[in-house]
Length: 178
Image 1 (cartoon, one colour):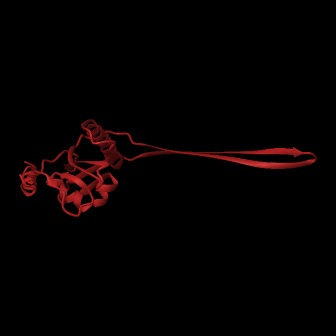
Image 2 (spheres, helix red, strand yellow):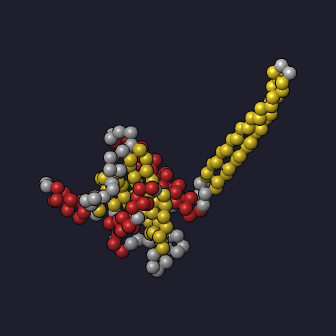
Image 3 (cartoon, helix red, strand yellow):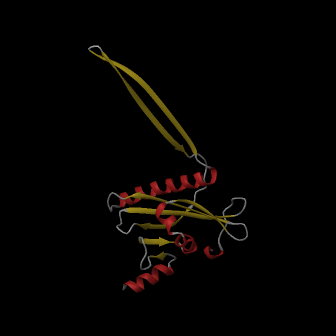
């Protein structure tokens, strides 16, 4: 099977694949979500969650996560899928329910007196400790995988989760998905 026939058969199977000039490799995106992801290449690259308001009140929720691939093994691919699914769902919770940020700053100052012969010298020592912690906690409905791709070098794996929801947050079955 030549490459054109393979591309056509994959597109008929329901996948939107790489286009020449893409910033990514091995791109597989469900056609119903391709317009949203391809319209925002920054979301595809930087990761995170995005909620898009549609006409009629429905919302599209997209979450993209990434992880560095250690090698090309099947076991590594499974690890990457699991890690990205968890990261993507966490970004949905953070976007829809908020992120708790805790910041602690501690300053300790000491003055040391040093006597050299008859001369006294004072030295001031300051220590600053800054700790910032973020926490995302909540419940997110599981979402379908709507896309997978890699960086041009193939060393970073990306996974996109997505869904369409009505005003009450219930999943909507898209007409083109039936």
